[in-house]
Length: 71
Image 1: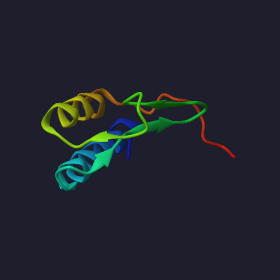
Image 2 (image 1 turned 120 degrees about the horizontal axis):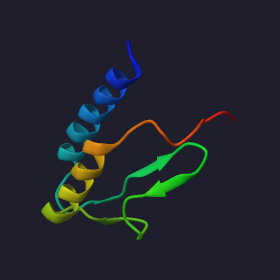
Image 3 (image 1 turned 45 degrees about the vertical axis):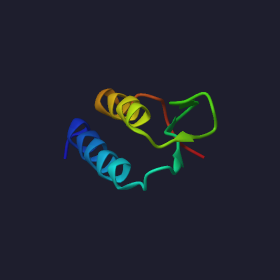
Image 4 (image 1 turned 30 degrees about the horizontal axis):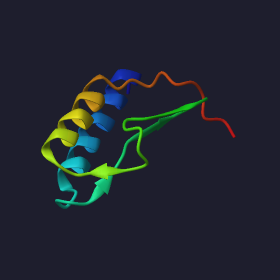
């Protein structure tokens, strides 16, 4: 299984999970490797259409490019 194929499965799973969240809950997406990045500056944001679209846009272009996760 190639690396791009694995990340495409992760993208699909993230969209399913994102769409499964209950309305009015709070969420954020934090990417990590050698460093980390949050989608939203706040620790969490309300689940609404605008924030879901932002999350989906991030997920769509997400790659496994943040360095190693060795402990």
